[in-house]
Amino acid sequence: MKALTWQGKRDVRVEDVPDPRIEEPTDAILRITSTAICGSDLHLYEVLGPYLKPGDVLGHGPMGIVEEVGPGVTRLKVADRVVVPFNISCGSCWMCARQLYAQCETTQVTSEGKGAALFGYTSLYGSVPGGQAEYLRVPQAQFGPIKVPETGPDERWLYLSDILPTAWQAVKYADTPRGGTLAVFGLGPVGQFCARIGRHLGADRVIGLDLVPERLEMARRHGIEVLDVSALDDVPGALIDLVDGRGPDAVIDAVGMEAHGAPLGKVAQTAAGLLPDKLAQTMTDKAGVDRLVVLYAAVKAVRRGGTVSVSGVYGGERDPMPLVEMFDRGIQLRMGQCHVKRWVDEIMPLLAGDDDPLGVEDLRTHRPPLEQAPQAYEMFQKKQDGCVKVVLAP
Image 1 (cartoon, rainbow, N blue to C red):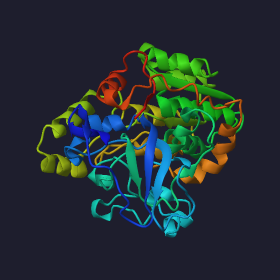
Image 2 (image 1 turned 135 degrees about the vertical axis):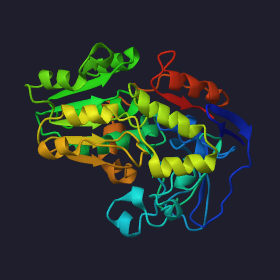
Image 3 (image 1 turned 60 degrees about the vertical axis):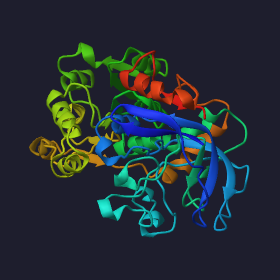
Image 4 (image 1 turned 45 degrees about the vertical axis):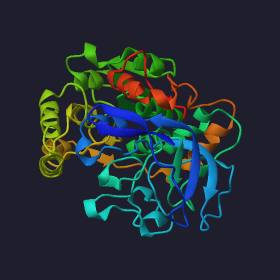
């Protein structure tokens, strides 16, 4: 089959790889019909390369048609249309029983001290072949895949794999009081959905912040108030002034470790990436730092007693945080990998009707064939051609 493989920093290629097969009774084989490029895939394209090896298959946002199931899978049948959550969870362990699916004890990568295994996301999370491919082996298929209706375009359902529940969790964690104000840093795909979900769940005012014109315009047409951070000298101060002189009730950081405007962090990440893999892994694990400009801004902008919700991916082990300010101002901080299936029952009714209240069919800007995935990665990273969201068609 054809699959997108990692070959080195900013070097991904579509190659022929062996077809997946049933390996465990709880496996299923999926023929992929759509597979997304996620913002966190760009971390693999850049800073997380030391945890990949040439030939690793990328991708953690797929959907498709069931081709085969193992004998331990009774809830799926051949020809079912399903979406696959990015984290692999069993549904029955201690953590899963508490809906902490991203911490599944059956698939935890304990050798690396990490939570549940993820599709297509480095040795830190199990080196499980990903879904930017024509076919995918799905472990723990007795629980994970989400059955969706046969009708409607893939984009109606695809984002259940990752970015839609990730945004839903971020907004839930933000806990904006009804009638309050929510600010969203970063209007990439997750940030777009955070802003729309914030409105849907009762925030009176949602302010989205970014510097990419196409992202700002997309948020604007969904009724979101926007700020172009490139035009601001003091982003937290501007937010505080905009919201009663005290700041938003809640702030979401939907950016993460590769934020713009953090030159020292970028130098540190680049330097680590130039080391041999073993040394780079050690440096990242023991002394890694993130570009924290957005997280700092979120902490400084939120009102006293407010909440900062972090959905952007961070990987630093030695990140300094302004704890004295956070403590004095009584800020709550919530974060973590999304527990995808925890939120599906709440989201699914919003996708099933004709009104599309979350605008899921107004997100994807590009749908190239799988063969053009390398060009799509470069376009997405460089924010070229008005790119906001890429969905690949195998």
